[in-house]
Image (cartoon, rainbow, N blue to C red; front, side):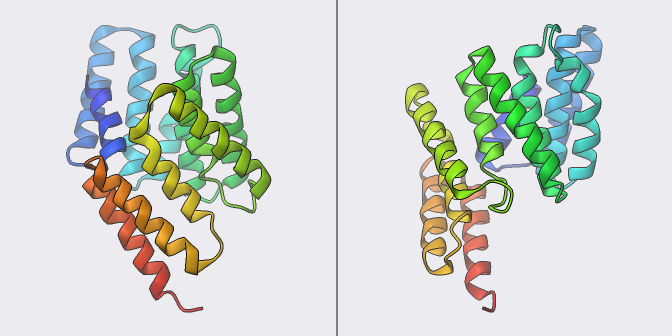
Length: 211
């Protein structure tokens, strides 16, 4: 349950108590003495650290947890999600080539397992890569696949995230700012006020940035 609250924090942007919830997930996993719950707690802890600004700590936790989601383990179906969060943490540190490798592995693993939700989550991580690493053509194909998955699962809660990622890839400041504001409005529509505020601030910063 505590790991789920970390998921909800990622969706909503409300990070209050997210680290505490991740710590409780770890405590529960220890109490359950289950590698399955250890894997879920590892991902939750890594994601919470990443969301609260400790990307280096997130990388350490997630890399240590990789054996828990390796092929042949009970938690292998969660490997794509684990890899996706690790990719995002590496990207936050500027380690984009490593991030690209992990996000691609996440997409392929999710497709192989046949879990569409994890494939969508993997694409979200992959589409966060900078244009210098993920070309426009590959990104366009990725957005198309991600949107198809979104429709298939009626996963409208992540639509604002895709809109934000697409806006951030726009190299033209004139068109990027209104796209960011549209993404902020989409976040607000689903009740993710903290994300809406963050994206609006990013749009303003880009407007204020000298040419």
